[in-house]
Length: 287
Image (cartoon, rainbow, N blue to C red; front, side, top):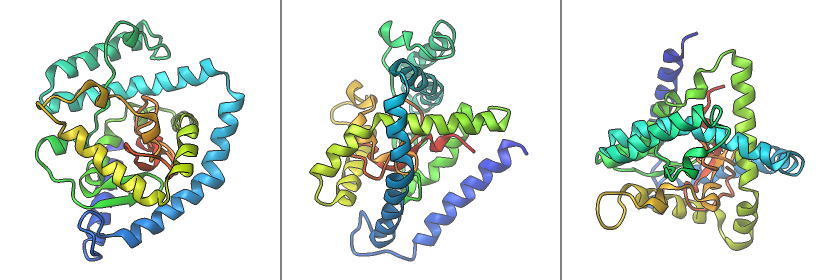
């Protein structure tokens, strides 16, 4: 089956979710679907607690650090290609060309991205997605949404997900079983990188749902509309491990996490940034 029909189905699903929620508005203008979002947050949290987090803990404790670094670099390098496209679409030509150069260097001299020689050469790593591109074009974020497995989002970012899935190079990998294995490894690796941040979030936040929601919304706003000129500060282009959690690299753990893809994801326990997620970074890789 070709990937195009699949991406069309994903777009229809994303649109269907937003339309379904349109009639469930509540009192909070930023979070009118809070009761629904909290239910999904609870579901994601349980998936993370009983499935993803234990596996990620074993992975972190057993897998050699150089292997974990290689996995993160590999998927992060694939993510640089989509980041380059989004930077160019946003009119940030210099950043986009830098991303293209990063991808070319790491894919060749860095042995398929296993080694991040581009960063050592002084080429800054960025992280952009189509939701940010839409925001740059003036599309409002809309209400906050907590997506099953994928975690924190907004109506705009949810509608942008099919494009992000389509822009994930790994989603075209054949045979399918290798694609699925890679997606799983990326998910677990991303979640493992956020274990410490998750623990800090559990200790610090009285209401993790509100903490993640507010952190995600603020982070996304700062990425799209940074203070000062129109260029995004370099620090904000980088992924913040603590925040990333909020977006789980996967079932609540994952996504946009180690400078990895995307595709994303971490545990609902994540913290502000994409904090966002209640889930998978690896969500961008299609199964």
